Length: 487
Image (cartoon, rainbow, N blue to C red):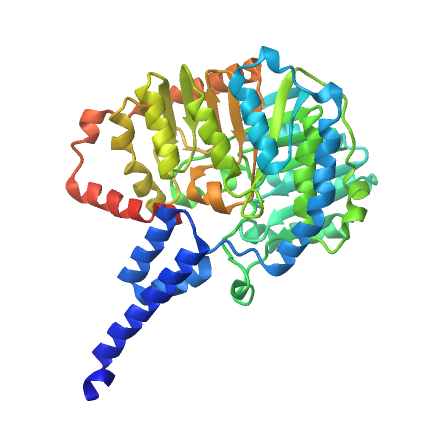
């Protein structure tokens, strides 16, 4: 009888109960198999920490209030998308585009309800100063409304000048609203800038606030990673860049200046992008859904150019794996070339297989990643995939001129994905993201030229030399890969 109460026996029994309980829960929740196996491995290896980790981060819990407000928003949001579909001037001419484009459109509409819209003008902006100067100019020209949404707003440099410009706009009577992620912009929220903005009449809100009490009801690491600026409901920006001046941002991490790109957009797709920002504001605000269209300055836009654009909002609510499915269709539809830039490359098995399949059938696949990133675990996990990719001819290039943060995929120089999505499990499954799928050869060629500029600052990862790295390094990379579904 004493044996049953021996501390060692109790520990073994507790270990078994934890594994069984988490295992049963994982089976019932039905996550992606690789994610399920990663959690079971972690719980078996470190039962106490594994249990705490699973309870904190194991499921995509967004909280009852946010889920309820999303359900309230869904019907008017879908009605808005139906209205967009009924505008002939915004309907693309599919006959002049590759067949994959219409297939992507149908998939995107099925998954998120947002159609491809024609008649857009897209201006590709590169470099932090050029992006921030353009945003400043548009803010200073705002007449009616100004809405900004960023994952990170960081004090210093030109980012502070944007605050000054928003204050000036509010002083002119422009309706201004700022939405930032509570975790990503934590330092900025504690600074004087939000107080200055509120004092000027600007609505400032933190998305998805964190804390130990909130962790009981939803995951603290589900973040709003979107970057959107909308001016007067007519001009919009999105892309990889946070509201930061790289000269003042994360210099202590020794990865160099962050390198980003943004798109400045006019035309019908501005309304779709604005709707994404509007939905995020509603999820956090105390206002009712029928109050928001007037506040948001949301209205139909006249054609401004020739690009066809589909705005895809993805996240842990409703859209599920929409962005992953769109990316897979892009990759499988490639015939000649695929060029990818991403700061964090930790693909799931489906994406890894799609890239290998493309290279194996003769598509020229080039992956451009930064040589240094700000996460050691992600860097190790990412490198564990290089052997698999290079074995079938994927060209991997390491960018040396800073932390390359631009997220882009160009297929056959005609189909482009450009936005906030990293090619890792966090972006594909957990974060709220926004991406532009652009079906336009001119824009594809412009982004392709930017990618070629990045290649000028890259060093090639050579398969032969890569295979000679020391076994402790390979071991560390392969161990990190086991946890890649959780990154």
